[in-house]
Length: 473
Image (cartoon, rainbow, N blue to C red; front, top):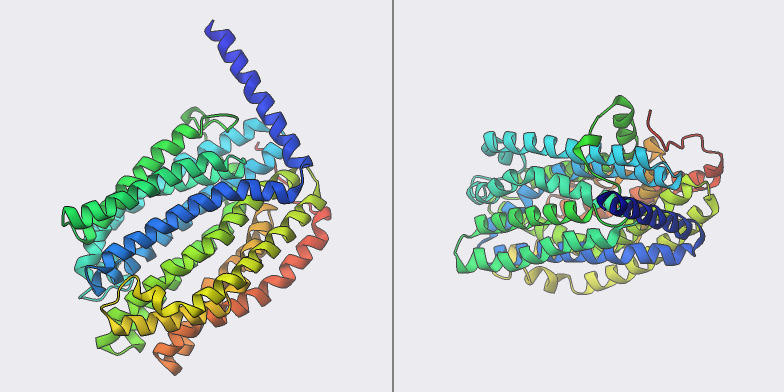
């Protein structure tokens, strides 16, 4: 009886996979992008909301507590960068492999991405705890911020392997077109965090350490749910029996994940640079307020950007499947539909953010006038160029998914790295705090001008690509 059940279950999974392939390669691309984007957008919105709630409740504690979240964000960006490296690197390969009907290679790659990220995360979390004080100082903490940063960091470091591997699971599910399962896992953890924040911070009077513990607990719950949900339906099987890492697998992960590592890694570097630049170019009595202001602006702009990124995540499985199936016209249609939709949204959000900048900053901390002035000015400068975010983001995702590793990595590095970091030093040294407020705006202008020729060339020459890799030796 058990053998018959397993056989019928395997047949059902095979039929589901066949139907998905037909849908992905024949249905209207705009409908597919929207269909996969909706759960991604919802899960990202929920995650962004819990980040905002985290900052909101911590903002009631002190300016230093708010700044501490910004300091630890630089560490979080590092582990996210590595998680996206493994998740996007293996996920991009998986979507192309499924498009080419090579499920065995997809299963092996999924195991490699997931288990390697867990082991790497365990090592990073341990090292973070051992070298906590020098690490947090390096990330931009001042002496007055450090006690709060340490309280918040401990739980985040312990949860690092679960944070990294849950992000990998999230991406593996998205690239297969199973974004609804991903939404449930990520969303449940985020909603739990929203409930735990006021409970631990206010009711149990744990302060900023309560915010860290709430994040750690919610990330573990998400990890459990995502792992269980990854085994449902037609998803690739994540099993330790398939974990037999090879050079060929890691080369594919590098090719598919390097752009994400560059983008997210430089986001961490940019945060470190900005925090330390504030200590250099801002008067000592305003440093904590400036770091806290940049933290609030980052959370607010990330919330607005999650719609664009969510639409991009809806585009990626459509792109990967159709690229693997060599249906290049469908890839182009999906790209332009997503770019145009994201650009219209970016223009609208930029206008709203500019008009309501002081009110947005005051919602997080209204007891520090310097924080409000710095934060409102920074947010308004960022809003001027929010319209460019969709094109840069989608160009990066497109190049990454079709395996154009070098141009994808270069485009990924522009916004937070190639332009932003030099501009922080150039504008900070010449214009002090106002220069730091304006750096992201000029970096965005440089990023879109840099991305344009890469996108147009890749779209024009895509049908002649020789880089398609869909199986492992």
